[in-house]
Length: 191
Image (cartoon, rainbow, N blue to C red; front, side, top):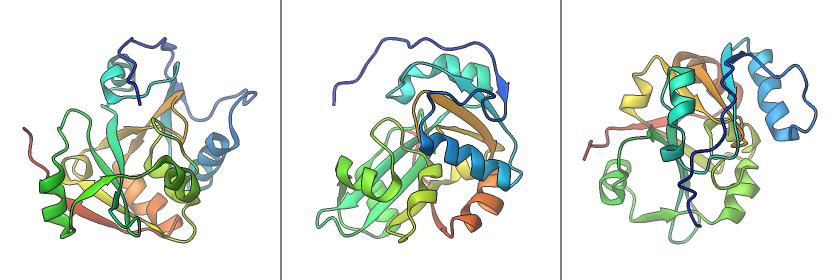
């Protein structure tokens, strides 16, 4: 997949909560807002053009006052075990170190077909909120300790034309129990 290094257009308004006008928004994005509202999870939101990488999200980070986390969707070579890794956007992913910590043989990026099948998301939109669509519990969430220890986290609402800032405590204590997913913790190095 070719990465877009151009800076996307970002609406400079920081919105509180879901969009007032949901025209043109995808059902999976609306579903995310519905769940957050149902669980009384407050969030701020910034709308923007498509962002495919953490590197193009500088203005979004600044507006949300919370760096977006990097979300990686990984699988084993047999494509029988799947992992969603949440890690700081500025940390480099080192496959060998990650595999050692979760006690798994070498992993690779999972094919898009599984991302769509299990999480109903596409590349560039990977987010913890996709776990709401993993009703068969095929995906293991793994969180880097630096994300876990942070007060807030920035992530997409299953689409990469908006970014949300949510309290990490709300994700751990409200969202994950609601979607019936647990998580593993890793401590990936800054290199």
